[in-house]
Amino acid sequence: MSDLHIVEADEVLRERLGREWGPVVAAHMHLSDGFSLVALDGDTPAGLLAIAWRELPPPLPPTVEAFIDIIEVAAAYRRRGVARRLVALAAERARARGAYQLRAWSSADKDAAIPMWRALGFALCPATTYPRGAPVEGFFVARVLDYGTHARATSVSVPEDVPVAGSRVDSSARHVGPDLSMAIR
Ligand SMILES: CC(C)(COP(=O)(O)OP(=O)(O)OC[C@H]1O[C@@H](n2cnc3c(N)ncnc32)[C@H](O)[C@@H]1OP(=O)(O)O)[C@@H](O)C(=O)NCCC(=O)NCCS
Image (tube, rainbow, N blue to C red; front, top):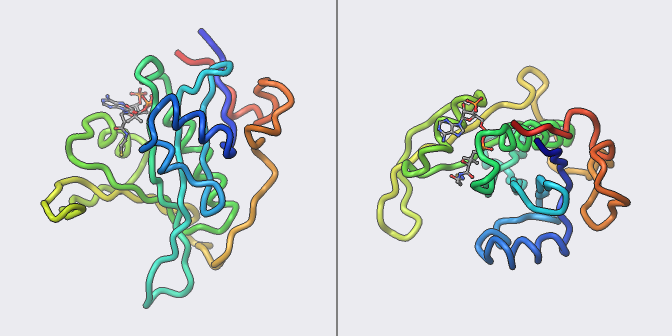
């Protein structure tokens, strides 16, 4: 049993994830145009979720979504609720900033991710995309964040509720609130 905590990534943590998890991972981590949450076990990265703010097109009124550009949990930490916690925190933060929905894409070969989206209450929309000209089967998944009082904001602000990695004083989970520390199974 160990305690994990979640921090918001800064440039230093993004560079570190780039070295340890690879440049593709780092390239999907958003800082100024979204945010990136990193689950740490002590000082060891255990999971990552990055959100990119995206404005949805007309004929909608101004509507921002929080697009999950990457979600990944290190193999040793899977099936312990890390992704569930990352998604919950991302949803809380995106809702607080007025985003209408969380959305993501998983190709059909992601045999853990697709059941995960279902388990986490996302709608599943089978689709074919053509990222490099060739067809890729998969699912767009989406979850409305605050149905009934949905997003009116077109701009986002940065709340103070999650520490940015470089600003942490220590690794105690109290910095991110009781909901975000987790005794992993
Ligand atoms: C998909 C991934 C992020 C899940 O992370 P995780 O921390 O293991 O997920 P959680 O433990 O929070 O699981 C939440 C729920 O999702 C479902 N789930 C997760 N992994 C699953 C799997 N391998 N098979 C079936 N269901 C799964 C379960 O319902 C689970 O709840 P439960 O454990 O109480 O049954 C992780 O497996 C991963 O990083 N995979 C490789 C990268 C990847 O596919 N990323 C997504 C690309 S879009």
